[in-house]
Amino acid sequence: MFDPDVPDMTSYRVPDLGYARPEHVSERGIERRAALAVEILSPQDESYDKLPFYRRVGVEELLFVDQTTRAFGVRRPDGDGWSLVSPAEDRWTELASLGVALRWSDGRLQVRTDLGVEEV
Picture 1 (cartoon, rainbow, N blue to C red):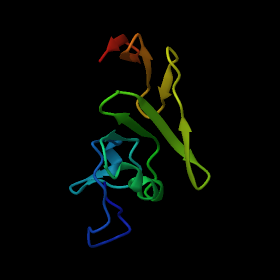
Picture 2: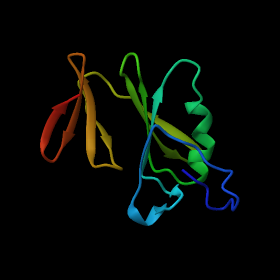
Picture 3: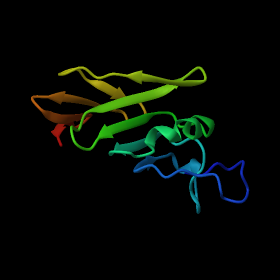
């Protein structure tokens, strides 16, 4: 993900996954306004250090997933920072950026779409 306000391509961050609308993608990659950035958390990683950058370039939603427990948290822009949407067991958490919902049920991550529910 690049900050297009920095011409020399030195202001960027690399999420584990990124989703953007076609008008926000260039030859360099996603430029501003990613719909969703996904960070897979691992010990001593720098995922949370990217929050100010993601805010500055207008990321609409963040999904953090713990690689060990598979627990997840969703963050959305709020004022000058991010609000955390904390999922509860067996309750759906909407990902507005993708039009899907996630939940933990019986120790399994489920994804709900218009087509139904899948376990991952």
